[in-house]
Length: 146
Image 1: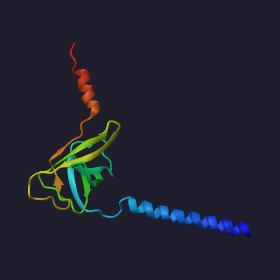
Image 2: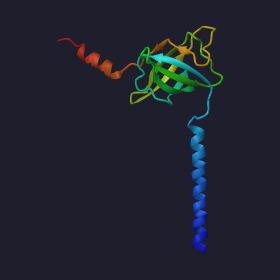
Image 3: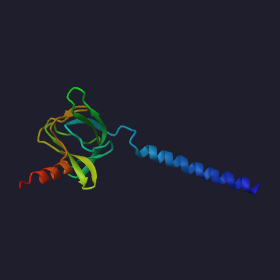
């Protein structure tokens, strides 16, 4: 009888921890709408992934929520999920930067001087594609003349 009570107690504790883990995971994966959604169009997004950071002046202000291909222009449309209190001037520049040499990318927004702010679901067209370290190395190697 004591074994059955011990098994029930241990099983209950495991279930409580499993339930707490599920709640914690669901609260941290960003299922809820965070704030303002704007789009940015890039010719190449490199290794940019959903969930990568969006920063202004080195401070995280949002994250990448989706990457899709525009079938008309063949440009990559990146949807940015910004915090509620962040509004981007319409003449801002968005560029994809590398977090380190080992990989990992983020979108850096350089705010413009316009007083007109991008509204929900509007698109930022003034963008800079990421610099490929492989392409730069290839150019350096093959540009050497004998």
